[in-house]
Length: 220
Length: 113
Image (tube, rainbow over all chains, first blue to last red; front, side):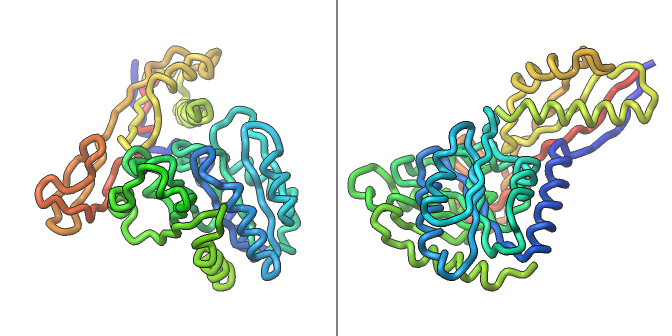
């Protein structure tokens, strides 16, 4: 005889619980952490480099880099002056809490102030997997087009700050900033936004000041 | 692409509850997926046939219940489901909108024998 059993259990529950453990581990060690998410080529690694160079005199930094293959990104972060751990996901399209947990085990968390996690380039899946980091940052870029908030609502609605990279290219590409911002405002009202260019350095001072404030006044 | 680990989680949850109820066989699995949760039914079904093999859930039917997203206009309080790429209020045209629901993704129930 068939019997129905009520379950009502969140399918990503196991990941979320481990994410909570990651958060507690970071808190215990007083490490503030950012999760960088973006499409491939938006400038995640460039912003990692700029952030390391801009803040390494003030904070002790480390970077965890997620990619399907290669250690190119971790090499760039290390060259910029930070401790860097590469996670190769071997095909998975996002980092999850287990992968970050393993990477945290390889870091000396007690001597760190700021950890930047660079997620796999993807505007869909990383939004569904909590890592336990303190703030999620989305890096949009002008050449991607102004319709991205409308096409990737899950990503745009779940972040605490939005960087708009490559603004030096605004004169050369079709990108209606008002239309873009309208979509952002709908999905994530009041989200703090940083238009900047990692290439020219324009606007980076606002971003660095914000990160500095977050790390300095983090409550664990 | 992340439907593989997701499908493994579905199996783990279903088997755990079936085991608790001393089930011999899991016949149907009822999943609830919000419009804003990026899960592809066909892909979950594809992986399901692989991961559930040789378990008591092998051959179980996956039942997908899709929930539309609900948005609420912060100006006139109207609740509505969004069109494809227009998230503004259909009544007063405001774009001051809050997402009320649509990112659900849970296992609601299982049928067992």
